[in-house]
Image (cartoon, rainbow, N blue to C red; front, side):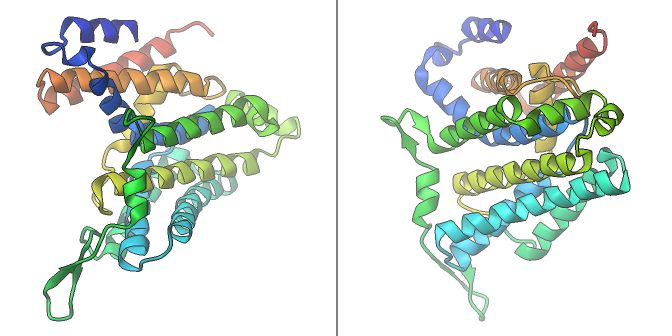
Length: 310
């Protein structure tokens, strides 16, 4: 983190990095990825992986936009239905993994494809926006629901975006789960040694289902935030987001082997990735270079974990 900050100060793009607006915008831009990383942290600590978070996020954005914009559902019911959709996807993945003993990589890869297909089916392959098609093929436009404006607003003197505050709430929620509940301690035990946890009387299957269900729930939260930012639900959205979420968790120091890590480490990873992306962006570095650097960072972080003494 200190190294990234040092790079930002040296390559400050004519002082842009030294302005509060740059940091504020970075926090807003990284918030959706950060929410996904919160759910990913729970799954990785349990010794699993969830490759479906990007697709579930896209499905949630489509469902939320469809219900709130096209169907004009009240915000409470649209949010509840969307959160239920995301949680259901996670529970299905967790159930298959825990009951059928299928590898998490395979199950969540299948869910990634399935959720993306459902999103395309529900949306008809189109973006769910304020443009509604009439029977004659023409379009008319409806107003953006006020809840979208609320989620896309800035608070505390126009300094903090609402989605950033939502990320903060997700982090606090995960911290309470992992450090202050029995379920959190069980999750660490399962990730450390699943067989030993089972012999100790820990309900391994139920704990895994809850972990993946929460990952799906956080994906739905991210989808709602994404829809509010883009003012639409896009079935093509969220592609590759699962890699960013995994990178944030791993770079923070949480072990991919499970049983080790904290949500605080994930926050550190979120900030490292967020600031690195922002520094490259304000210095007009091309996206291809950013992608290559992200890949190198992930490999380096994993290599350091492998060679780290237990």
